[in-house]
Image (cartoon, rainbow, N blue to C red):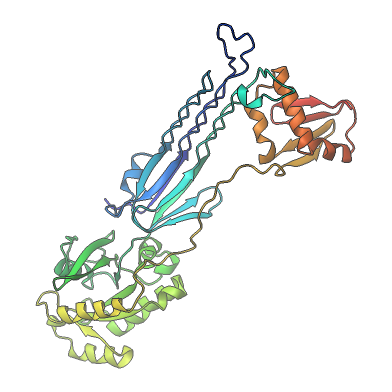
Length: 417
C-alpha cells in the first residue's frame, strides 16, 4: 500500500533527576555533597532510508518516544543518558509542525537526519550547587521534560522523470515496459491510484528513476479528483515526461489534452510549469498520422512511441538521458528549514500585572519547575537566581509593593522588600 501523508506524535525522553547525597566515609566527618547529575533524555530523530518509498509504517504506529535518562547517584555518579530513537523515513519526506504548519525539515539525502523532539536535560545533583556560602546544599534539580509535538509528514517522491498526462494514456504501460515495475494495467481510467517507481537502465552503465504519476484531470490544481495528492509528487521530478494519447481512442483531442495538463501544472506551481518537458505521443500503433502532425504543428518536438510494439522507446530513453545529463543531479528542495534547539535564554520571559500582584512566564523561567518549592534551601536558590537575572529589579521598576503576590508556574511568592 502506498501512503504519502500521515500525522504522528513524537516526544523526547525526560532527563533524569539530580539527587541529594553526601559523602559518608569513616574518618571523613565532613565529606561534603556528592549527588550526581541525571542523564539526558533520548531525542527522536528522523533519518532518511533510500530503501523506503512510502509512509505506510506510520499508519500502524503513531507515537514515538525517546528513552528517559536515569537519575544521578551518590559519589558524583552521573545518570545514564537515554537512547535516541531513530525513525526511518523515505527520501522526499517533508516534516511540518502540525500546530503551526511550519516546515521544520525537508529530508532528501540518504542517512540525512533531523531531530524532531529533543530529549530533556538531566537535572543537577546537589554537588553542583555547593559554593563557599552554601557548603552543604540539601536540594537538587529535577530533569527537564522532553520536547513533545505532533508532526505532519508528507512524502513527495524523488525521481528523475515523472510521467504525467490524462488517465489511460499509457503511463503504466510505459514504465512496465522500460523497467521492472509492475503497476496495475487495464483499459479504463484511473487504473493507477498511487505513484509507481521504476529504475530504467539504458545500456550497461546508465540508469535513471522514473515515476508513474496517476492520471490528472482538468481542475487537478484545485483538488478535483485526487489532484493535489498526485501533483505533489511531480514537484520533485527533474524532468516531466508528458504523455498524450495520439490515437484519440477515448474520443479526446490530443492537442487540447496537452494544453489542459500544462495549464494544471502552471496553476499548481509556476516553477513546475517551467520544468524541462518531453512531449510523448503514445499508442501510435493504432494509426494517428494526422494527430501527430497536429501535435508537432502546435508544440514542436514530439516523441511518438508504442509500448506494444516498442517503436520509438529507445529513442525516447536516450532523449531523456541526454536531457538529464545537463540538469543538477541533486533532488529539488522546497522551503528547507532546519529546526534548531538552543538553551533557554535568561531574558526570554514576560511579566504581567494582575489585581493582586504579578505573573511571570516564558522559557526564561521554566527552570523553576525543576526544583522542589517546598524545600527551603531550594527556595533560597530560586530567589537568589531571580535577583541575578534582574527579574526582581524589573518588578521594582513596575512598582511591586510589600504583600504583592508573584506567580511563576506553580510557585507563589509574597514580595517583601
